Image 1 (cartoon, rainbow, N blue to C red):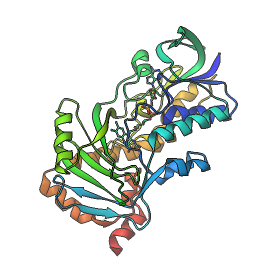
Image 2 (image 1 turned 30 degrees about the vertical axis):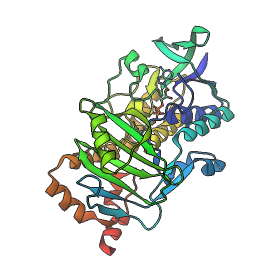
Image 3 (image 1 turned 120 degrees about the horizontal axis):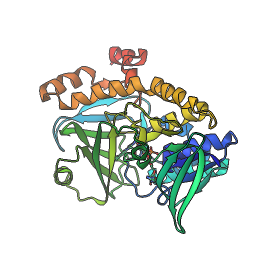
Length: 360
Ligand SMILES: Cc1cc2nc3c(=O)[nH]c(=O)nc-3n(C[C@H](O)[C@H](O)[C@H](O)COP(=O)(O)OP(=O)(O)OC[C@H]3O[C@@H](n4cnc5c(N)ncnc54)[C@H](O)[C@@H]3O)c2cc1C
């Protein structure tokens, strides 16, 4: 009997596994594929990322430093409103390597990470959960006192135990061009229904072009038109889903969700690496595998930590659908130096932001 069975070795699962293994709990992580693959993420994160990885990882992961963003209401070639900080706002990192680093840190803490093991079913009992796993040798059944569903936006754990889905799943597409680009600005184009398209300079790793939108629309055709506008042809295309939520409830009696499975990401960018790991730390601090009541504490505490920012993030996203003249007026008002933390839209109302606006 494991204390925790973790489903999925993405950032949320590996972070949680590392933290509870450090506390001496017996932890197994089942990952359906190879850790970090396939890539479906820009790896554009606030500098808070460095507090979640071992010190020696920075050289391996770091690709580029970002100080600001140009927001365009038009496509490539249109003029952008510039938002920036004097110091770095964010970093672009190697996302595949991030997942490997986090999984290694969990292994070093004592977690047992098993790749090529897909969780195919769960049954909750009063004192434990039976987890059915398809591995290279067929179906196995393992037992845990609790199960952490860290299995991404479509979460089979969430579906199996009947927890609600997030409100929306957006479809994100990425492609890369190899020319090195060390600029410290990203470009954001508000030309896609209810979301945006982007260009991210990745240093020696080239340039990334991407967009995300509702899956019903023609994502691929829009992506082609966007990259054509920039006059580039991309390769290594990939795509993934972005949950917009969070759902009303993220735990049952002995099963709880973390990361994208729980809709713990920013509705205005889709970014979920830092929110998922923040929630993983909350869970590791509070959840006791022999005490199901602690799952309610987790539910309350992660919402206290993130929900205000998520709510404000929904409002920011509404601005993407505002008429162009209103978008322009709003951006003209805030353009220039900003004091906002990229993961925390509530910092729009901080002293730093006020100071930045008044001194610009
Ligand atoms: C196009 C795009 C761009 C993005 N860009 C950014 C960005 O720049 N910055 C940012 O912060 N976020 C970004 N995100 C979001 C980010 O990728 C997610 O928020 C993050 O990966 C969530 O981490 P997670 O651990 O919750 O889930 P995941 O990273 O999705 O990990 C889930 C893991 O579970 C495994 N799994 C799934 N089902 C099973 C199963 N049944 N059994 C066993 N294993 C299973 C999967 O293989 C996977 O390894 C982007 C997303 C997309 C789609």
